[in-house]
Image (cartoon, rainbow, N blue to C red; front, top):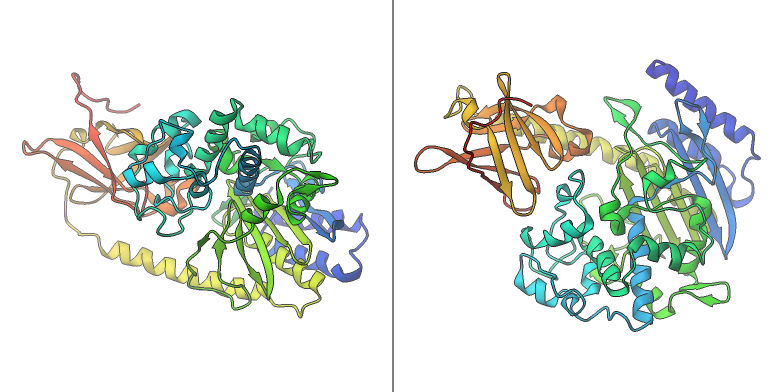
Length: 516
């Protein structure tokens, strides 16, 4: 199917699916047309949205396709990856354990995990469970340690000590997935139960979230799940599922908008579901109250208040109304979970398209405006203008990087002398091989063809960079040599916020491989 025909097919199914259901009436009249237009503009194949007000579901609908190739529509029951919206589930269990006296959020982690160790000795000794789940560890993301390495949760935990921080402990907000994984691992060690079992038993079962699961492998065995899609040169293409079970407490949950409504209601009702207090009101409030300030971005909207982060949830205001929210993104999926606790309004939006996809946020704000009876704001126009500015800035940055290249230089050694195995205690191995007349790098689970940039600096070939490494385009590897002139290290910028990660060459008794 050509790109044009595929887009027409997607649009046709979007319209056909909604023709089969009554148009939304009452305060949400017009929401269908808004969602369809946003999906068309940003090429989103499928979307599900649900909303509650005063405990009652006022919207629950699917749009577009969960499987473009098989032309299968999205329903309110369709399972999507919710990504980092999993984080609040981990904190909810943490709060339950504190309610039971098994964990104190403000005691050092080392009282529960005696082998807990970070690069920073102060953080090692003083880090608390609260610190783990409000992004103030001092560590930048270091996501390539887990994204595609296949390392287990236990091994990832053991390697935290080798990851360089870039800020002092508790000095600032920095989003950090590995600390949430550690919070889940802490729950496992305290209870003797896997994190997955704790989520099922303590949240899924009491909230009747029967089909929600903890792995994309489980989703694919369900009768109604969404396939992931991404952008490839302006085309919507199916992408592989990303299994992130090892980092699960930070982002591996899959659910539907139908099953997320009881979870949102739980937190709007301060930990209560029906007659049962599942989580204490105290800990539910702590999750939804500011713990650390979030620095303002360059394109802040005046209708959105100063940002902060609670425990597994972001906290701000929306047009004067307190707003609790979180987003989630993993290959092929972007989600948005939001509620206005004082107004008892909650919204969940799930989509099966990653890349430049602002639609979940746009739909959420549109629903809020309609349910609150506010004068509508053209959020789509603002987003369009913001993206245009960002694209221009990115193009300027690429031009500047290209200008830094020194022409007429050559590597100091024959290419075969760069080939070999290099190691780092945290990130593991990096293997450089000579494939024909070019070098190939295998690191962090990725295989990257290299091209010479200048001197002993090499870069991945731009048009062969995986989509998962889109943020690393333009990265430069620097090979270094010892006093004897022998290549002995390679510095690779796997975490842009710290010094390049230095991999030390492993001495070999035989010549390195020249190819696969």
